[in-house]
Length: 165
Image (cartoon, rainbow, N blue to C red; front, side, top):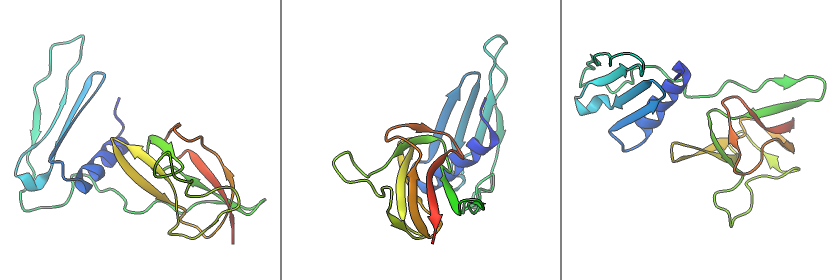
């Protein structure tokens, strides 16, 4: 089953790339997204394996509207401070593969003890073959790395613990 949050993320990723169409099949659900500026319809269909295929439902978007079908928040929610120890968790904004550095031969962006600012890149989460740089969003010091390099991470999964400066 594809969740609404996943569809929003797919729309955002499609909007940020030069791709014009995205097709995804997950179990019984088939999702086809096309950019609105291509003057093509967005096609959503659901077919059930145990039943006859359902007809495709087409939703036409205005060609002049560059807005995506669903609004996706541009910023992540601010991190919640743990009042007992004065730290915040940097969480994954998406499902994907966690990488501590830009390539296997380079040093990690941050280690335990590294100082970070709101705009410091702390890792990469690869989703749908796109490398997404994840920023700390807080000023402080990395006190713990909570994910392993190359590990699959979930939306909202803690990646780092940061002691606020």
